[in-house]
Length: 204
Image (cartoon, rainbow, N blue to C red):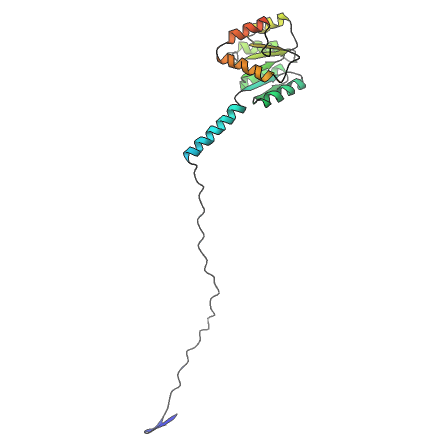
């Protein structure tokens, strides 16, 4: 209360604003998640380069497939090691029946065929293959201990393109068989067969 010339005057006290009862927010603003990055498509040029490199590797390592047919595991092993080291793909068969089945299914580029085997010997295998139009052109190189001329003549009659006698040089064998296939590609099948008859060896 205050006194003025006209009498006492009542002064009203200023009202205080009520303080907010809500505590300050403790939330941290969350940033929206970034969309997942999509994998980039390879550029055509890079894809072509990769395909060319893959084809080059395949040409060096898988361009030729050989089927090694022999009932002696050590012979198959030593041949497989040397052909594999030279970039060939190798399959094996331990008897004549197994060989015929695999040749019909897999069509190898060349067959190294032993003569003396159980179930069906090499002569029987070659004869069955020669009678089947689907397999008669599969190149056969006999790999055998039989070294008589009459055996060569029988191999020739059955359509073989090579004749290698044991003991053999397993290190030189892949290159020698590779040359046989190269000559076949040039159309020299009959020349190879004549050399077989005359006693020439692909590894000689």
